[in-house]
Image (cartoon, rainbow, N blue to C red; front, side):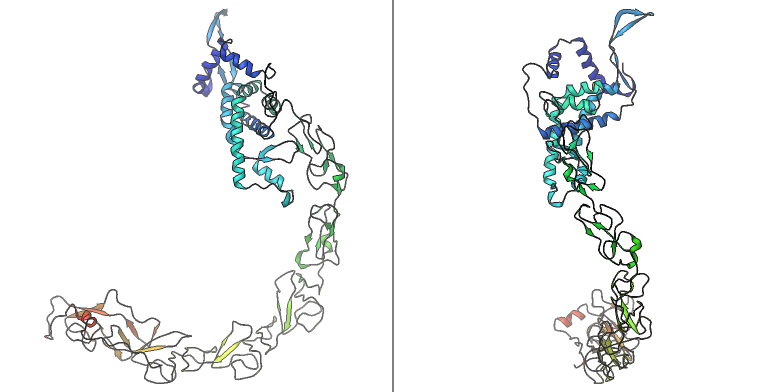
Length: 586
């Protein structure tokens, strides 16, 4: 019965269609006839609803868009259902007809099922007088952008969501009410304008009985009737119902779309000037800028740091490099805003010998230049490299860390990260471990005194038999290597093979911190790993407490008792107390 791939999908529809052909006098047919007659007696005249009208026109546009996807289709629906008594060439003629799929009721229903979902991508546009139009949200946003911020329609997300819900609901109501009109319009092959007339206009239609004329300031290519478009910028329309707009005279423009009078045509800005909308009153381009076009909203900055001789420049060729204008160009080494020599940037905009200039790489910026002078409290190097200041403490005195030639003196530490240098002498015994800027004094420790025998000697060097903690910029704390303190340490000749936290013999680690015969000692799991920031003489070692266990199968050659599991814990609960580490005297 059916051709191509639509047969299965159309079965029910075909049966209903045939029923309509067979029973034209049925109640359904009567209802259809009455509903489709817009001029029927007793019909209630409905007033137009601008928002629903906008939804209707947008829905028709979407229907037309969808119909275009199958406009070139050659598929058909075979609605022939029986045979007549008429015989031609030996074959009986069949009752019914074959219709194009693209003009079928099936195609109409498919389109109507999709159209209302598309309303979610629309927004209201109310600039056309007497109309509420629906446009794609992106298009509305672009059109609104031409208006000043204060005049733009605000579209917060909550309001937009409510609008889209209305659009979809109104569309569903429209499709339900106008289904037969849409089907008939598709069957007729109506274009967009004809379908709008059939679906949106009439006695009971949402847009009113007939299309309204476009108001002044707007136009429509369809006989000057709604829906209308605003006259573009540079045009106007003083009359209603027009199919186009009138262009402003040469050299004139309008500030916005929708002008209804030639009085809105204003002279445009001339080259070399600009305004917010490109129309008079205009301002000349400032010094350092140009504009070759008429009707401009801004001017172009001169390239390469160049400048103009005056305001109102029209061409880029008027941009020149001018020494002393405070705008460094690519043709100048520097430009400090004057042409006086002796200030670091000379009258030809070249950096003077022994001078330093900042912003040399900033094209278009003013250079800051000065002679490099030792003792001015500003550490600098000259641009040409002839003057190098390692430090500058604001004077030219010797003996304070920064010499009269701005070099760091031996034995001093200077903060070279500041413009004005701060220096102090590196002194052993002041409680701060330091190294002088020139490296001549390097304190390996500094415990705040100049005593020997406490781990850090009088010359701030580390001593044997001690482990110290500290770092540069801090006070050093030193501890003697002590057997039984729970830290296995080595410093010079003072060496511990083990340290189990006590000084008992017979538990694997003797009272002299030697590993006893038949035992093995390993670092205890979970114990401290040694002193933090540790330092000592060459080869020093610091690590945590050891756990000593008897080697399986070994004999107790010392005759002592086997190690008691509580050896370490007994120290905690009243047994032999481990000697606490003693810090060096401060």
